[in-house]
Structure formats: structure tokens, C-alpha cells
Amino acid sequence: MSYPTQARVDLAAIRHNVAVVRERAPGAEMMVAVKADGYGHGMVPCAEACLSAGADRLGTAFIEEALVLRAAGVEAPILSWIIGPDDRLADALDAEVELSAGAAWLVDDIAKAARQTGRVARLHLKVDTGTSRGGASAADWGDLLDRALAVRAEGLVEIVGLWSHLACADMPGHPSIEAQIARFDEALAMAERAGAGGSHVVRHLSNSAATLTIPRARYDMVRPGIAIYGLSPVPEIDDFGLRPAMTLAATVTLAKRVPAGSGVSYGHVYVTERETTLGVVPIGYADGISRRATNLCEVLAAGRRRKVTGRVCMDQLMIDVGDDPLSAGDEVILFGPGDQGEPTVQEWADHLETISYEVLTGIGSRVRRVHTEGSGPAPAR
Ligand SMILES: *Cc1c(COP(=O)(O)O)cnc(C)c1O
Image 1 (spheres, rainbow, N blue to C red):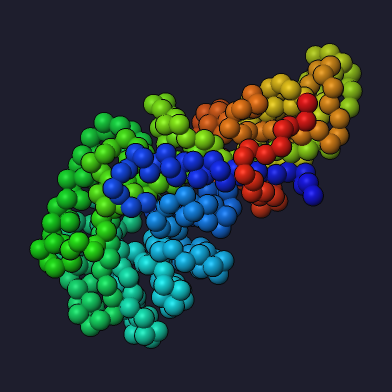
Image 2: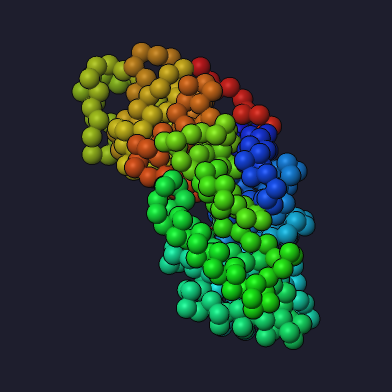
């Protein structure tokens, strides 16, 4: 069965990328971030591929995502790190999902859920070392530790992790990196003195960029995301031998000759210079293809790169293939690993002045995720 739009995800590439990252972080555990539907790649199959390739744990933003993994039968340790008031704490504890806490009120809520369910919560205490996002500020870290130790004494929680997140890991040499590492070390020392340390406690700080470029930020565990999907977090520096896992493809619904001077798509921002063949491609901004790709981004069609011509619409975009042969049913590749000359998602991100993460996670639910071994069928030529 073929679908008009497909995001083919090469699970062999995912496993390769796990091995690449593993080699860069010897001795550290690996927790792969599979939030946001595995960065748009399909969370469950990607999680399973990562675990089969030797990843130790999984990380999700929300409890809801962790519960989806558990419902699919994933048994590996999972940490969820964005938790709000009235969240599904009891469900998380019943499913043995580890929880991040960066505020004393949340420790109290988790302890309450532990009391209700009869489960012992496994906590990763988060310190804000300078990203000014989640986690306890330095001034509140002592209180957070005290609260966690108090409920630990009641047998309601275990403290299994101490962690933080870097703001500028993808900007090697940025002064904030050293400052955050120093503050993390201070927070760890304070936890140790308070009795919240020990060899069973996992200390973790590094996303993909830090894992690949800042050896001393690896601590006991790294938390790569984007690198596992095959994109470099620092594309201007190195691709690290990572392989992009996703190929985004769509099948032409109509190809037709039009005369010179034809205005194409809304607003006629593209006008044909001569008689030419246009292809209608059934993917648009409702599927995550930015309207800013108009007359800018490229796709592979009929064996060559073509610009997206005319405005990207909600459900469709247009290409101009000149006198090359194109028919309904031919496949157009928007991006992929680049093997066949197609653009990469990094090229799309560069054109759109954003990061690969945004392009990948923006791909909508109408695009069928198809998981393959290898980069999938060859495009129509
Ligand atoms: C998303 C996320 C990661 C992974 O980040 P990448 O840049 O994709 O490697 C790691 N840690 C936290 C807290 C995250 O939210």
C-alpha cells in the first residue's frame, strides 16, 4: 500500500546513529530523547530500534508520551521531565515512569501520589544552572533537596538522578557552557553533602551537542535526541558520520503542460517563462511544509533538483520540471539522506532560517510514517 505522502524512517540509520553517539560517549549511559513522536519519526518504532542498538533508557517531555511507550510494551527505564500541576502522577508511578522534579511543590505532589498508589517514586532532581527554564534556581536547590530527602525518609521516593540542561551547547566555546558546568558541579557537591548523592545516583547534563563536543559534560549519562535521528546539532562544524533517518516523499497527483506566462498557485508569485510541465505535489503547510518554502526550497523530481514554484498551499505545492518527463504517480522526494541527490532536512532548515528540529517535528499527522530497514525504495525517475 502506498500513501500520497510518506515519511520513510530508516531504522538501520537510527541504530547506526546510536552506535556513533555511543562511541563518542564511552562509559556513559545513554538516554535517547524520543519526545514529540520521536522528533516526528514515530516514537515507538524508534524507541525500540534505539534500545535494540544498545541505548539504555528513554526520555520524554511529558508523562503522556511515556505512557504511550509503556502501553506499547516498552520496558526500559523512562524519564519524563515536563510535569505540571494535576498531571498524571499516579499513572506514571503505576507505569514505573521516572519523574523529574525542579520544585518543592512537585516533590510534595509526587510523594502524595506515591502514598496513594503504594509505589516508590523514582526522582531526578533538576537544577537550573543558567538556562532559566526548568529546574530549581541555585537559591532554591537546598530547599528542593531538603524536601526530597524528607519524603525519601518516609519511604515514598528514591532520588535516582541529579540533572540540568545546557542553553548553548551547540555554540562551542560559549562562556555559558563552562559557567553551567561549574554550577552543576556545585549543585552536585551540595547534594552529596546533604545525603542525596551516591554511586546509584545518575548525574546527567548533555544533549546531542554536548555529547558530541564537550567530553567533560558527559557525567554518568548523556541524553541525545537530534543526533539519533541523524542530524548534526552543530552542522557548521561536523556531521559526525550521522545518517539522516527520514526521507520525506510525496506522489505527484497531476502533471500537465502549461503555456508561457502561466501564473502558478495563489498570488501568482511564480509565472512560467516558457511552455513547461508543472507537477502538483500533495503536501502543504498543513503537513508542516512551511509557506516560506515558496520559490525557495528544493525537491528531487524526475531525476533533478527543482524549486518549489509558487506559493505552498495548505495541501499541495507545485514544481516546474521544464521539458522533463513527469506523470501522476511519480515520486517526489522533499528531503532525505542525500544519497540520490535529494536535499537534506538540513538544507531545508538552512533555507527556512531555522533548525532541523523544527522541520522534522513539524511534519503533520497526515503524512504516513513508514518504518524501513535501509533508506527505502528508489524515487521515480
Ligand atoms: C530534547 C531534550 C534533549 C535532547 O536534545 P537534542 O538537542 O535533540 O540532543 C535532552 N535533554 C532535554 C531536557 C531535552 O528536552
